[in-house]
Image (cartoon, rainbow, N blue to C red; front, side, top):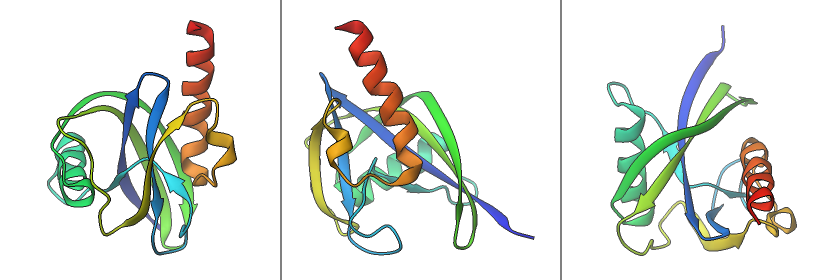
Length: 133
């Protein structure tokens, strides 16, 4: 029986850009993704995301609305990823999990090697941004 791992991710926007981080290690090494991480036992999604952003980016954040979710099969089971709108309360710092941190234009994300689980939400954000233009 495979287990399901819950992961939360921060969608941080500045105008028509989003914050993406490049994975330093693991099976997704070199892929760009929304920052975040695993939900620990006893944590709510917002608590987990606030903790992950403190640990990974050395920044406090306000977690807003759930924007979407996706499920992907990982090497150790199913990964259920929840994307939340977030506001950072300071400038993010590149941490130990990532070797790159960039504000990426929504119309340019396809030129990045994006983690498969993040592609759907990026496409949706780009489509919404185009509709508002």
